[in-house]
Length: 162
Image 1 (cartoon, rainbow, N blue to C red):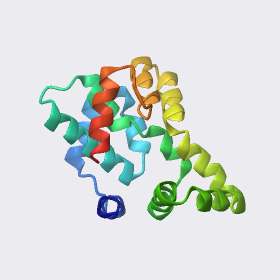
Image 2 (image 1 turned 135 degrees about the vertical axis):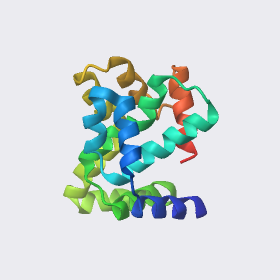
Image 3 (image 1 turned 120 degrees about the horizontal axis):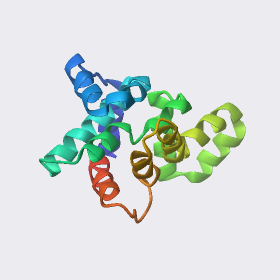
């Protein structure tokens, strides 16, 4: 619970400095427009995952660094507020029945939840469309139980710490 409260606070108070944004743009090159489309809390999360990746492996591949920044790209279309996202995470962890009832009662929320829940696939499709097939494969499997790619396994470890 303490971890989730901290996570909520980090998302609610998220800030990205101009220097951090420039670093992301440099790492992503032509894909930086996708990063800049993300809400600030998702940009902050990507940057935090990137910092964890660098702490774990002082020389991470460019692909892993890009995956850290863009792994949640597909969530942007859900347009979830920090409160909605936190509520969803809490209900997924504690009461799937309540979440199901909420989704039935609120069709608009249910549509946005479907995007949130399928964000790995959606993000991967956007990356493929942008010509980043290798990165798309990493993003597509970043929530898989047993990812095929070592890069994805590294990403999962870093994401799990954030």
